Length: 474
Ligand code: BG6
Image (cartoon, rainbow, N blue to C red; front, side, top):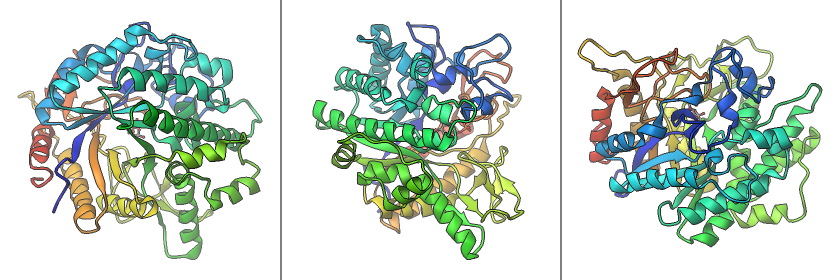
């Protein structure tokens, strides 16, 4: 049996992590542009440090990133060489609307993505476009405080209308928000939110989440109206929560963590606030204000498919224990003694992907798409100019095997897989360049130096074979 014949193999990137060129083409500044490299980054992305301008003291890795703004032809040609069927990318909102609330879009920004999509077409690559990947115009953050304001919905929908219309013939697959659940853990990055002292953070986060959920449902409606062929997905950071032990308190805590995580996709896929969320948010006094009609909007326009990122499972213990902690792409959790860890301390758990696929499919019964999965590692170029990233191949092989098991043996409906990331780019969480994910090495170093030359790693040839054999040759 194996993967579907039209399985969408490819890779995923985000504009703010690879494009650079933030002062070119009439582009405006966005939230991630002002997230600095170094120790202050985390406080900025969690909304506890206000930084809405670039200063002379910090370094801002998004400014140049890996300069895909000028290298996209070369990069997409390399994706084509690997045989990509799809390329997941995001649009930089501020290339299209530099401030976010203009009446007319910026033609130069639109033309840039015309060219990107034309390049994809040359190689038979289907774009999968994230409308907002950790992306919020700074102007709107200063004006309204980002997604805490309901007025963001109109600005977002204006962006959607321009994109769905302009790229009607070029793009059919869309994701409304990257890792929408990240708003709870990285509110500045996820929704342009920072907190003033004594603010009720949970309340603000869930209010902003509600605005994004309504915006997402309205985007689904608009996408279908403009082109009935459009397929729109939600996107959340997945990774099942395992109880640290079979102690009922641990099992309970893991369930609660899972529910908190699934809340967003529950609304986007099923069309309503699940009862656990209603009850708990009300009890905690953080249930969002809704306008009449919101519930109907959510109900009428669920997503067509479910997409998620998977880097690791999480291991959850009841509060008060003294377990060791592990890192991860969502938040710290207890250290799972049965797993190995990446150089950044993220658990490596391929079977966890199969578990997550089963859980998600059972929960929503809609086609799924894994739109991020990969290993961040330090790569070295040897004296022959080669990069032998066998550790990355091992990681991906094991995860692809697990997803094949989920398809073949468990019968889940999987549309595709885009690894994070096909080309080295800057890390979202740490801003580092040395945390590399790509099949393509970019000569850009931690201190910002480098020629930006692209080089194929060993994994490049391996992934090409995986695609050629539709996942048979691993
Ligand atoms: C996901 C994001 O959370 O994880 C990506 O959608 C991000 O933007 C990826 O790059 C890996 O995380 P990091 O921190 O290693 O870049």
